[in-house]
Picture 1 (cartoon, rainbow, N blue to C red):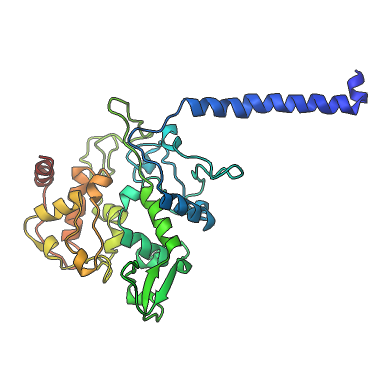
Picture 2: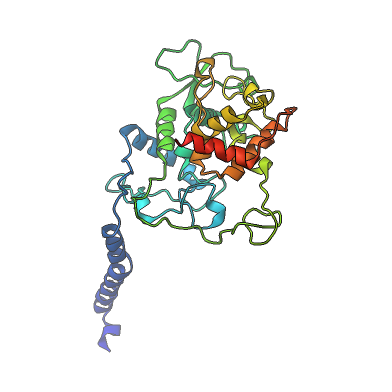
Length: 336
């Protein structure tokens, strides 16, 4: 065993073993994974502005609190329409030769998962206000404010993107709060984060630990009792970030539901249509575009019913409640 007495031979042997192990454990599996995954046909590459925004996302440390991976467990249904698959990341490329920041899947969920945030929340106004001061749209948010991504101007140019910040969060600022190019790049990146549709005929991955229909007061659990849907919880998960917990919205950003003629109308057709198809009719008043929350979040008719009735019976609203059959009929008419 002369090898133990010859440090050169021992070093060469250890180096060869290390290289062989690296090939079998790291390089070959990574290469095979790369060859067996192709971008989904409906996915799109990042634009130059979104790619710049990805750099801002990394530089500002957003990956420390946000993931981009919808796990195949039932609790992640609110973040995407399906669990993430390898093909979702196949279009990502290295930043450059020295930096591999292709996939920003993350590991911490201090903040919500961002895999599908561009579809869940496509409103540019919401994102910019959220970046300027997260507490302006989510009162209990622990996310830091990124005010340095904005500047204050006494007069704004026509091409400037002005953020409508409520008076309570302006900290005495009287000028126009304008998004900087870095903020707009980050906005473009966030809006680009959308789950691509799978090709026709391809089986959709299922969420594990799912809940079967029919439960004693718990949606989806097996049992004989009629399932119930918590309108307050559904409103909090899907609507509250814009319209607020008190239903009063944010002045100059998101309209109130408290006392809204749409909500107080005896017919819920317009209210349900807005939930399913979105609405941009109040942009001229300074309000943001309402995304099609019901469609984007894949809400069931039972969930839509619970949300609508919650909005119609809270904050002083006392409007006629809707039934499941009425909601199903209206949703069916929207698909024609």
